[in-house]
Image (cartoon, rainbow, N blue to C red; front, side, top):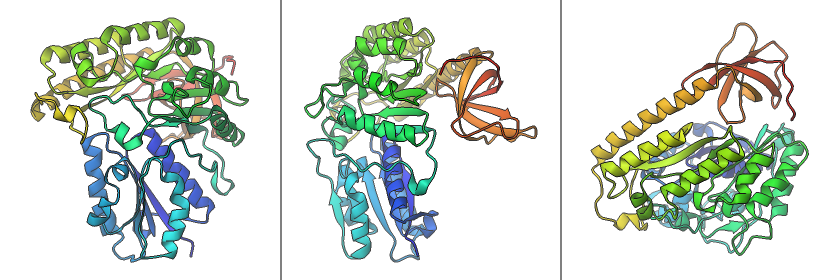
Length: 452
């Protein structure tokens, strides 16, 4: 029988991309994806940026042990930030874990898994940081399956900003950029396999090339080289740091047709006092000036963001500053959560921690404001002509044709019903937005010319 595996992933898009690479590699080696209960190998890719995802890892390990208790050969591969954080110590508490992979250890996973299957008593741990980015073998599509229309490409790993609340520098290590040519080679492979949209990934993408392992290309130049590749319709990236947004990057939004008019630009707080305690290295005025410059370069720009509520010492005036800047920027969406101590960070040692009830009350107020801002932004889209990239069948049933879902250039899910046979995975079709839902849009076909 062919060996089976099951993947569970928490955290950022980089974790999702890492899990996808490992899954594609195992499929090419003859493994078969299966439900958790039938898996010989369970890959748990973890996140420790916040306390809640870390707690989910421990509960997931218990659930895995219960679900696979009948299979004595079953074992767990623990990857990601929690694995990096705890290393071999995890073996003491969870005997089913036989392979621990830190941030730079994923490249060793395929061969290590084969070895563990052959040596039942063995346990392995790879948590040492490398001095440079270790290139992984390109695994685009398993078993000649068609590529997804949307591809994700890592361009760097690690961060040295040392924001006071953030554990990433200790779990991802120093910044390590790939060479521009390695990034372009992977992008070409995805496009040749059928992808139409590429998202570039990194902990701080606009620091690409600035570390000692980088080559001469900076991030704005990399965007230009990727945008010039044949077959690319759309280009996105996550996540930038506001302090590193350069004039060249701002100009790119106005000059590169493929670069989508939506930017996720983490704010974290709207109060200068809180931003200083967070060690974010920019202030409110700097952030708002970036927004102004980007909208001047690309008037249809939309912005999403990250916000931490209840940072140590945050008072009501600080919180109101955050609400005010949300109104001023008019974010289309945001990821918001309550502050939680992360081990070893500077903020863990700060006094004036807020009561949990107060943090939750502020979070509810902030999220209510964001719901209103999001609803206004979506409502304003009604009547817009847009280009929809079809990504798969829609869960919205239709009796009059085929129900499809795709995303517009802003990354919003859009549902559309097309005549039978008119839809195709990866097709770019002109549409007119007809209705706004809470987190998505409805559209109808439109006849209009667009250059792409």
